[in-house]
Image 1 (cartoon, rainbow, N blue to C red):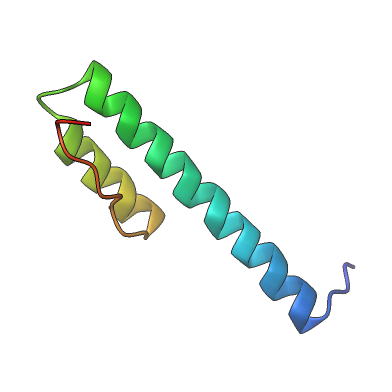
Image 2 (image 1 turned 90 degrees about the vertical axis):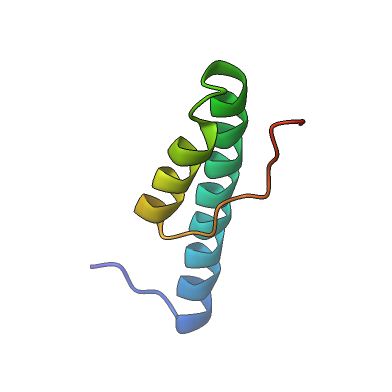
Length: 61
C-alpha cells in the first residue's frame, strides 16, 4: 500500500503531465525534421493519444 496526501498526489500528477508535454514537444520537433511531410498529423495523433493539446510548431521552426 502506498499512502499519499492529496497534495502529494497532485504534485506527482502535475509532474507526469509536464513530462508528457515535454515528450510531445520533443517528438513533434523530431517529426518536423525527420517526417516533414507528416509532422502535423504525427504530432496531432500523439497529442490525441496523450490527451494533451498539440504543441505550437510551424514548419519554419
